[in-house]
Length: 115
Image 1 (tube, one colour):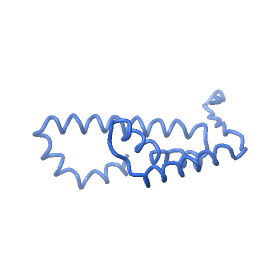
Image 2 (cartoon, helix red, strand yellow):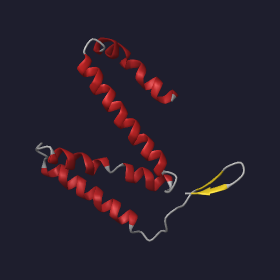
Image 3 (spheres, one colour):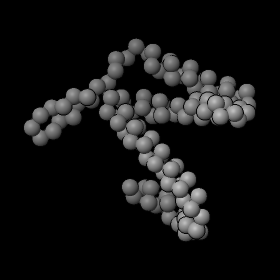
């Protein structure tokens, strides 16, 4: 929380300026909700995967963003697709490396819960 608070400090003047425009405020709120959901999903994924694997899979935004841009009709350059497919190839190599899935164990005060 401290990290995000410190990162937000330089943007306070812009926030105060944008409070007059409700459209910007609602779009910022929507973006904040999506980012929060993404961080929550990433944290939940760390329960079942190692940190290295989870961070690499999180880098799949390299693949997802051009794909979504293409779906909404934006022109995606060929070198962007090339980079996205290289990233996809890297994820495939990582996932098919033969290592068994990591299952975390969380121990509560009175019982062991396995996810």
